[in-house]
Image 1 (tube, rainbow, N blue to C red):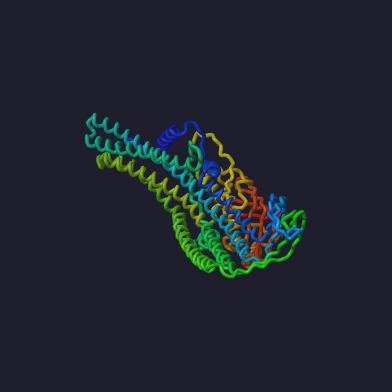
Image 2 (image 1 turned 90 degrees about the vertical axis):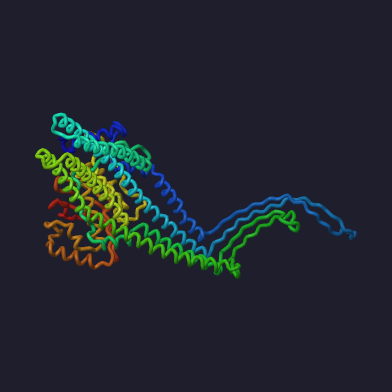
Length: 602
């Protein structure tokens, strides 16, 4: 009988895939793929240029409140006909030729211009709208990239499984043929195995096509052939849900989701559009100043130079414009109502997606555990079925079905793991908190294939334009080394995740979650007892209506089960704004990092 599909068979199949795609080319990690996408993805580049154009709305709006200065110059060759009586009283005509010149420098500064004020405010809102749109598209790049990377790697996995499955059936064919020759097998066994082999061969061809398509999709984003891709780690662990409840995620999403923010800015732009159109009925008052100099400007000033200086105010009052002001105002009001309805629709859509990804991420641990057990059960079933065949209880078809079940279980396990990683990112995208740390976390689940000595380059993992959680404004990647290449070496990522969760709980004024980041043997400063310190912190945090805390540029040093984090803490509440340098001394307790000591260094 053929042996159960094992790691050596899979490794050989994967090696053949790498030879087919890129030969000895070095592997591309997820963070390297993201760096390439930032440079080459046409959709992202388009969004970046669109945002550059959108930033000019600020200058365009402000220009309506600033002075307008102009200068004009003219010089003309003139020929005139002058008919007048001469000294005898007779009419005579002369044709003087002369050159006239005029130079004018003028200034106009709005004093009362409601239209200009509305355009200024509308320009600010349009620039903010552009920022929000760019934030959405920047985060969408992460989702598209990770999705394409995961699809390509999953397609590689399926090709390896399909190849190994066909090889297994080929071995089964040979075993059936030998048994038939010895009179121990049957023709039916051979036909059953041949049918399974032919089906596996067709599935292998399909798997190759799927891999080609998936790699082409990834190449379209990163702008180059990805060659070899990092695979999922064997030590795959689902991270604890943070925050834990859906209501907390909902509150965060309503505040920070960039798509909701985009619709809010659309509403604001529509409001200013109403004001701007209504300003068509309002008077306008300008300060004007002019300096002009002319030479022979008219026949009456022939051969005369004149200089004129004027300063004053100009009032313009619109009386009637054919009804255009009223019509445009009514149109703007309708567009404003539409924008509000679009905001409600987008909010509902985001919350539905948030709930979907929350449930998927929350149930992933149980789902993946069940899939792991399914694979182990399928492996045991193959062994048991083969033994039963030897005892005459089962037949060859039962072995083939058991092997098919094993391959299906392996495929479902891989799919569940990739789905979890995508749900992890999509949940944070829907909440508006997707940052470089999240990409770095997902990258930690991918490790280079065995035999690959390429090192993972340090790349920026901040998401350009993101209006997500506070940590996104100062990418941790600039202060910390690149993501580790295995989950066992992902300690730095875990430490940074603790810092992000600690500041997030503090900012949310969630005292219980905040205190949970501290160790059981935490040492407060100034000899204060731990119970007194907990009471003091609870009163201070709950006594604020609003708190925002940032950990800027964290520097991480790890020594076994101890770690040190240095950073610049930016704190702002309804009554205080402060900036301090801090050092956190961490210790690993029960498999989790905890804060043992908190030191202010300035």
